[in-house]
Length: 131
Image (cartoon, rainbow, N blue to C red; front, side):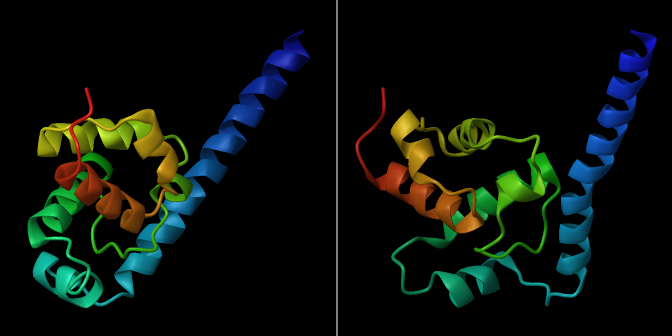
């Protein structure tokens, strides 16, 4: 029983180190990227999408404030970088930012990328209200 307790503590320490590894690798990769303003981000990735600048701005603000994510790209998978965070939590924060609610179906449509957060937020902002 004391061996099991020790083993549990060791496994917890290893998983903490391993889980933090994705975040560390991500932060390193961000340092080698060109830094984009929100306007440049929108222009580069969403100019012809019909998604307005303020949607990108709000989503990026939530990611910056809640997860300290900066210099993101649409393909960044938030849920793989921060494995302890789930999409429901992020959607709750996005809901606060934009004054809206995401349904379970909205959350299921997302794949965890920054792009899916931006597109689903835009869809929710322009679509019918969720009660």
